[in-house]
Length: 82
Image (cartoon, rainbow, N blue to C red):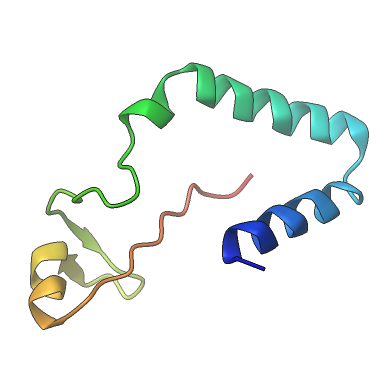
């Protein structure tokens, strides 16, 4: 099973434990985001991220270009708490 398939399976399994009214809110929010065009304007798989500098978890400024100079980089985007 691929990672994509495993994540989809887990996502569907987790929906079994969420009340229907909460699922409706989550699904509506997801659909609103999709309809906003954000998906089309987002960086796609294989795309090149623009350079940026942001504070890390320790408050130190980290830039993408400096991290890439040391080797491969994995970016994780956190949307924030629900």
